[in-house]
Amino acid sequence: MSVTDSPPPLRAVPFRAPTARLALRSDDASTGRGGPDGVWWPRSRDLPRELSALADVLDPLWGRIVRVTVDPRHWQGIPDRVVVNGYAVQVGRFASGPASHGITLLSYSAGRWNLLVIPPETQASSAARLMATVGAYPGP
Image (tube, rainbow, N blue to C red; front, side, top):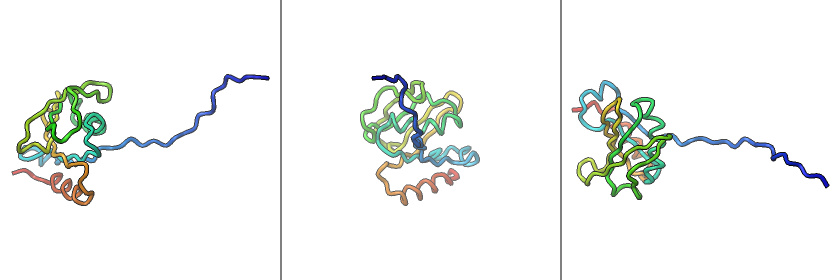
């Protein structure tokens, strides 16, 4: 009887990382700083998972995100810190109010950005309309 120690051959498994569903205001529209800087439509209410997809898009544009602030009523089990792409992001909470459906992102290089958050259970047609409207919003 013979025994082989060779592992089974590897096989390719297709993998596509989820991308953030995001619309940002243009540079021209962001100069007025009235209203949100963009709109984000996460796939779930799991902040650690969703924040990774968001950082994949925003880190190259705005620099490393170091802190986020959210309304805890809209997210499941918010930790004080989330590891995103190998680094820790501090998570803060704010009380409900006019920005309760938003997220504030802080970056050392780009400063503060405010995104309107569309609830994940929103129908695609409604979310697409809102993303198009906020993405084109020219400010006050």
